[in-house]
Length: 123
Image 1 (tube, rainbow, N blue to C red):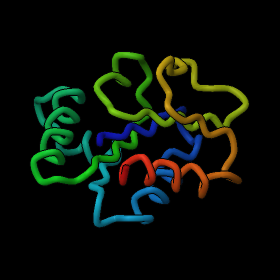
Image 2 (image 1 turned 60 degrees about the vertical axis):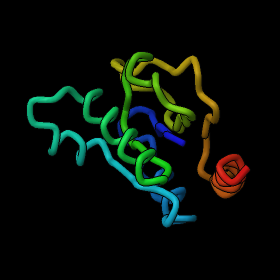
Image 3 (image 1 turned 90 degrees about the horizontal axis):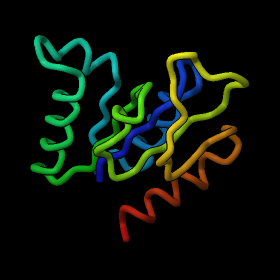
């Protein structure tokens, strides 16, 4: 399963992504936007994330991508989209996702959401 964790800058994407990753890290590979950006060379960001998702599938791991994903196009191609919506106002360049599977408005209920996601993955 390819999971995108998106939201405005400073919304808590990395905090949530790390919580999900460390819950069962043997099942996931975790890619932060800065890691992808640093390694992409001449490739577009979407080409690198497509490679990352394909690689995870090949080695039988689930993929977590922690990325602002400002447009709906950036949010496409994932099995699950988690929107971290903890700020009073989103960045002006961030479009609210139309396809979010989960929306996190506070960090009080993160354990329940993480357990629900793990349940979906484990079937």
